[in-house]
Length: 109
Image (cartoon, rainbow, N blue to C red; front, side):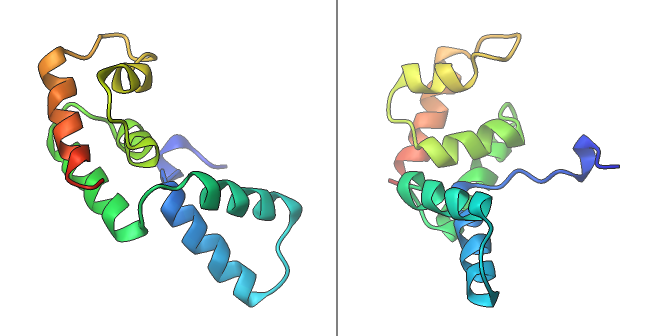
């Protein structure tokens, strides 16, 4: 049985690396091919940068791992895009926190 604790959130860059590695080992399933295409099309930063960005966002103290990964995948440049990522949270994210997130992201663009 897989629980939430067993799950690891991966950036699109990491997904692309994993599937590319699998492709080198043999034939990909239809789902893996779709995931690879998606990660190639929408991944905006390379794996090392994406992981460093996620780490830096987590260090802010108010960004969850799942949201940090979403931010690394989307690379938002506007406050509205950040608000959208946090829209499922119960508490709204403050303007000063949005600005902190955007300034961290800016370093990786």
